[in-house]
Length: 565
Image 1 (cartoon, rainbow, N blue to C red):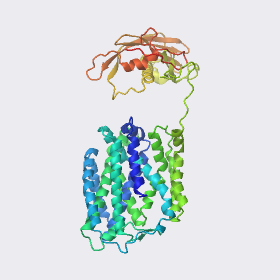
Image 2: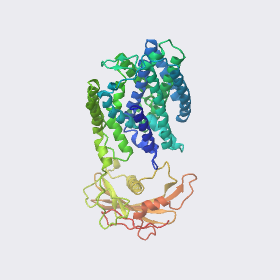
Image 3: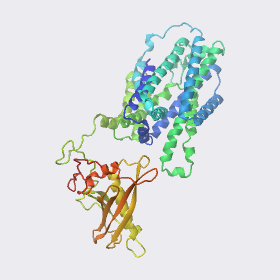
Image 4: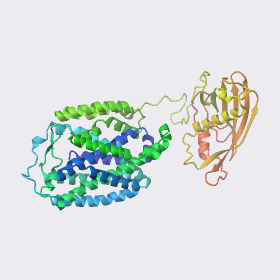
């Protein structure tokens, strides 16, 4: 119960919080996947290593007395092939079939279990400092475990995308998982404490007891049923690992600008086979070193705790203050404290280890618990008034050359031309003035409509016409100011006026451009979209029926009313 209950509760809480109303697991994961890729991969490496180690050390060796290199390779190849071939939806159906077969096999193994010699329950003295000291690491590790497991993220994203309830799905899943752990515990209880093995640290363990008890009278039906139960559990872990890891790495490499991808195919970089080979190596190294399972599980309660806590805080809205190197160093220190407390045993050190691991996440925990207070409101602004934009630069100081922001109704861009902007004569090439106006216009759009997304928009903004009257020319390194504002509009078109100034030559030119709006399917002309009206609201010309109340230059604009389009 000390192991199973935190395990199931952690899984259920993951689904409960991630499936809260208004939360989209896909958007949350897209925001965190790149920063926490290392955490996700280490977690998957550990999960597969633990699975393979258990199969070899606590099933195959007790039953046959021989190594299982060939069997492990075959298991990995078959399970990875399944994960490679099936999408998450089909894999879910296969796992449902695994559940039926596995539970039936476990029940058959339990029914055929020979009576344990002696049949005595472990004495109360077995609950020593080591057992009680492990209570807190177990709780912390299993509460944070699902958050660092990319398989759980992929499942939550798929459930939400298909319109299902993440909370309901994970509530049912947590109950099923608890039942599976209790069934596994029933097998262990029926086997008794026979078959104790001593690991390299000198500590006894009874993990192979079930396999040894079933093999006592030869490999009969009960022993084969137990093997099937274990293989089904292993296969469902490995194929899920492959599917989820490829899903993660494909997304990461697609968005990556790493020069490595210029030499190595992205599909090879995203392949989970590299991680699978690493897990095989870790599992066999642990078997050869005669370690116990605890040494493969301890990273989830020590090494990875700080990064996992940062991930949880960021999911709940805390600003990112994740330092992976710091979390790794603190996690290594926590691991050393855990090992010292486990071997001694010293319960206080075991309980201290996960708390030490959380130190790396303290900045984000503090930001989540005590968010930064909001700044003072603009002078004269009522509490209920909306401040949609804050100027990007204080334009009263003209020594900030490369900057942009609003000065009243004008959007202002400061820049400095270089030799790259000049022609063979030495003057700034005429087309660059047009390019600067375009840059100022795009920054103006970005400031007014920060949430505009080409992938989801229902309209496009097209340039209907453009004109510019050249007045003077300049050379390189002369400070330039480009100003853009809304000059006028009707139902369908918006006209932007622009002016270009030089610190040394004054007005260089002025002009205007006309914008139109079309739908994204048939490119039919539209009236000015409501999102454009809302975004441009503080900067409409004062004679416009859409005009808002714009604050004086240098202060944030305030919206007091919104006219219907």
